[in-house]
Amino acid sequence: MATASLPRLNSATVPPRSLLHRRTVAETGIVHLGLGNFHRAHQAVYTASALEGSDGPWGILGVASRSARVADALRAQDFRYSVVEIAPEGSRVVVPAVHTGALVAAHRPEAVVDAIAAPGTRIVSLTVTEHGYTFSPRTGHLDLDHEDVRADLRGDTPPRTVIGQIARGLQHRLRRHATPVTVLSCDNLAGNGTQTARLVHEFAAALPGTEGDDLADWLDHAVTYPNTMVDRIVPATTDAYRTAVADRLGLHDDVPVPAEPFTMWVLEDRFAAGRPAWEHGGALFTDDVEPYELLKLRLLNGTHSLIAYLGALDGRATIPDAVAQPFVADAARRVLHDDYLPSLTVPDGIDLDAYVAQLFERWGNSALGHRTRQVGSDGSVKLRQRVPEPALGHLRAGRTPHHLALTVAAYLCCMAPPPGFDAGPQAAAMADPARSDLRKTAERTTSVRDFVAAVIDGGLLGDRLPEHPVFTDRVAELIGVLTRHGTAAAAADAAEAADSEPPPAA
Image (cartoon, rainbow, N blue to C red; front, side, top):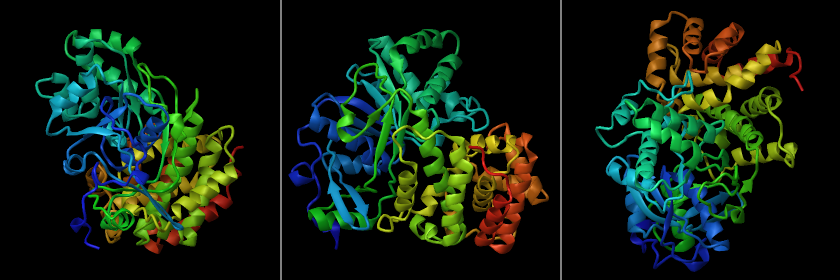
């Protein structure tokens, strides 16, 4: 179907039965940085459900970083777009309708700062992926050597980094009216609220002269940073999803968002200026997000990474196709049960067997077709959040976490394939800020062991794994097996070695 020839989805054409929020949202209360698919299928959907149950000033001003495609399309569609919830048994199309505007930070940086500073803004939320926080992977602190961070600190141009935008916006807020506000990270970072708070404070502390002193004092008592856990698989938009909307609604939507039916949001209830009633959409509020966060970051995200890297190296374009391979599914179960699960406490009320079974159902959702190249992108930041702590726990107990080593080995083969090894098109298509440096490291080292040592000693996975050369050795060995004998052989090698290890600590 030529969907572009159909009437466009907008406020006049959208079928009422598809709307998640039927009343016009006139007042902006949330400025959201990161106008990508995840935000529009997650936080926006929860906000629409909240407004169905309890009205309030919670319209969302969406801010894209550089690309104007989504912002332009939303403006053309009266800020309406569809979420296509896809499962093997069928699909459902809904329209959240809670955005009040759309900006592109690269085009109107001053407007972004002004929006954060506006007295009606009560929440500044963000989904900018892990590397959007401009922290050093080695230290976890604000990267003061980053060119854009330095420019934002000088203040001679509008801020370009997300942390700079938030900090400068809060600085303007303090100077104009000093109204409290909440900064809400919705990214896959351990302790995401705590980390965001630290980075904003570090930015304030690095401001020249005494410029940051008043800001730092105000941040301490007027701004809150709740920790959150977010969970929903949201692939990239393709024409297939535009066709799905056209088939269901008879309308053309230029920017539909595909998503799995499953969704979860766990938050600390620490909001300085109120919040939407997100519990109406199923959000869970708790005093302790960390158990949910680790459950998701390690069991879902960590295992997802291994599936993506093994799948890509095996020539599999999608996660469902990858996990359908018996050796990938076995490796996924082993890393989940043997390496990740002993490193966390399962939250009360979570049926672990049911949760794990649901994870494999989600990964196997062939109707959704999440791509390995998408899941595998930005591994240099993602793996830093997922691998080191569990690995260190096992290593200190005298056990080698073979499937965590396999995760790192497969990642490095995707990013910097050894000479003569073809990682394939899916691995080549993965975006990663460290790819160039990893390839340079590979070129200047004379052996796989030296390459892995240089990467781990260089802080890709933090600063404590170099204390355990057995892990470096194991990663190098698995790269050798993978490049000489293939992905299935490397998975079998990891499984055989894991079976000979002492059982994981309870």
